[in-house]
Length: 130
Image 1 (cartoon, rainbow, N blue to C red):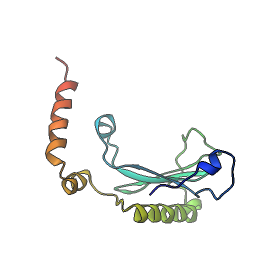
Image 2: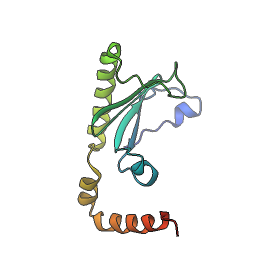
Image 3: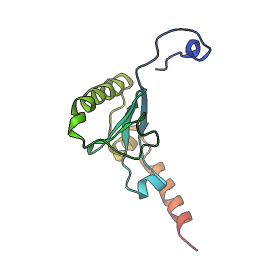
């Protein structure tokens, strides 16, 4: 599934990928408590785009906003850009066979529900003040 980029890293030539794939399959601990859902995204040289279970979630112009403080996801002027990035994301997800699913579905498919519940119980006890 990976791509050999050693030639580019060592100063050689070759085509660079147009984007990199980003994902959080199952949010846990601090992210879960903050309401962060599972998400998938792409980062191009210029933009970072992600969607979560509710749909498009974030869009940043990395040149104009390198610290990603101004989310452009609701900017109607960027609808065509968002559509292109969403298509690039869909291609990544299809190629990697990585659908955006609810955590319970992933855990069930992998046979990890019981282990996850035990882990959660253990760490929830650890978080509680004595």
